[in-house]
Length: 204
Image 1 (cartoon, one colour):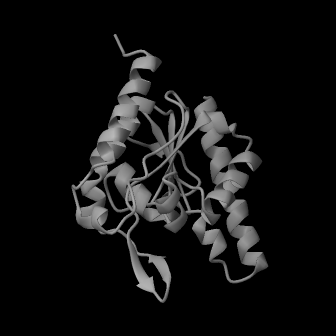
Image 2 (tube, rainbow, N blue to C red):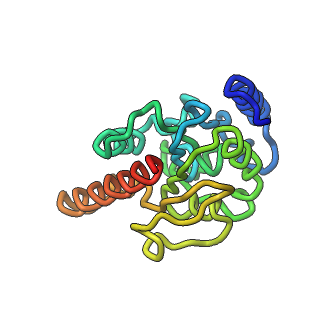
């Protein structure tokens, strides 16, 4: 008999507490703190990004910076209730390099992604989403267990981890990096379309 939502919530909270002291790779040495996922157990959609950014590292919550605001807007435009979403990252510590006084995001390595995979596996098991949305190639690699290009699977609902389905799309930070208004609008529109696909898949 599967565990009750209350039991799984307690287990998820326990995992978050344990992850707070994670030293499975070297990233913890320069990060402010572990940033675990947030949302409800039983949420039908799990959004998986790459790693926390500068703001997330300081605040301790996922997707609270500029990319998070883009994502929140796209989720709302896709008709997804915020309560139906669990949000996390493939890597739980901020990997960065200095540039003047700023801390600039640096892509995590395959070794770092693998070291952190234990926490993502537990989130997947305990939340039990119907659909996992991979935000970018790092998330896709972590969730699907293999290197995956966005263009090769975009617009499709594919087999995900366990019994879940998966949708692969861009990371919302790509919208922020767009060169001009037209490119930004096109990227944003594509993100909303992919989230809508995930919503429909979760609805059955």
